[in-house]
Amino acid sequence: MRPLTVLLILLFPLAGCGKKESRDDKCLEGADVKYCLSEGGVLLTSQCPKVRNLYKAFKYFKKACSIGSREGCNVLGVMYRKGLGLKTDGPKAVEYFTRACDPTYPDGCFNLGTTYMSGLLGTKQYDKAIKAFEIACDNKMMAGCHALGLLHKEGFGVVRNQEKAVQYFKKSCEARLWEGCFFLGYHYQFGFGVPKNLKTAFSYYRRACDKGFIAACVDVGLLLQSGSGGIEKDDRAAFSLFEKACAMKNLLGCVNLGVVYINGLGVKKDERRAYELFLDACNKGSGKGCYNLALMYENGVYRVKDLDEARKHYASACEYGDKEGCHKKESLLK
Image (cartoon, rainbow, N blue to C red; front, side, top):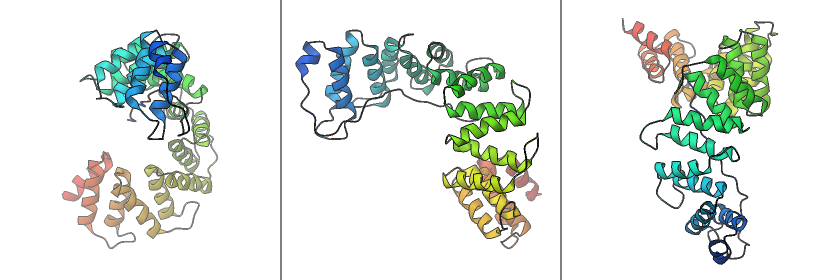
């Protein structure tokens, strides 16, 4: 299961060191909302120590919130949620995000939903998160639609419903949230909520990969390797995609690159390179990396056959959640 995406919406231009001193009277006394927000943003996000002032930023946003600015309330929620200049406080974050949340300001609703899911209130309150995300999604805040897709996919706070998940992922994909396209590829590949269609899965994975969602590149490569479902087999293209994914620190990409090297698929066979890739992936917590490393020791590929080493790496694979590793660990103990 992939972790639910959590994103706090807070956008301000980064300020340099050449700004004039903020005028408290214009915000705190004059109640100029635009000034409170713009100057508060500078004080909050400036990279210049002489300008950045979280205490004053808090006062400006609190003033803006008190005179009806949902954006001001939203920023206060973010400050409490992230502990910016003050102690992290989940209930306070919820209080201000609730004041920010409205069909006219769906960003506040999205942040409210992510806070309910964060556990900052002691438990994850998925039912309340869903209501907040629904307001966000209904008002064209597509990250809210994507969050609803993830919740329906996993069955958190709702009855698991892959058909609804697909509907929400279509919205997020169309809005260029590329993880949405990735999950559409997943659903079409395995027939979850839609008829199984590898060509359609391939097109969604390719779209996400081309836009920089690296996990999708691995799936494009695997489908090119398989050459099934009407997809033309292309080992060389698969190799390039695994290489790209691995270069971007995607561990599954590195493991599949190792598989390519050990079998000489689309590239010259290189057992040493495969061993290095599996070892590095295993050391970084990849169950599949540990599993393939163990296979090399079990079968004496590149390294001398060593069942003790094989058992050790199968055990690591199992610890990292690889079911095949658990099975192999037990079978080697007999």
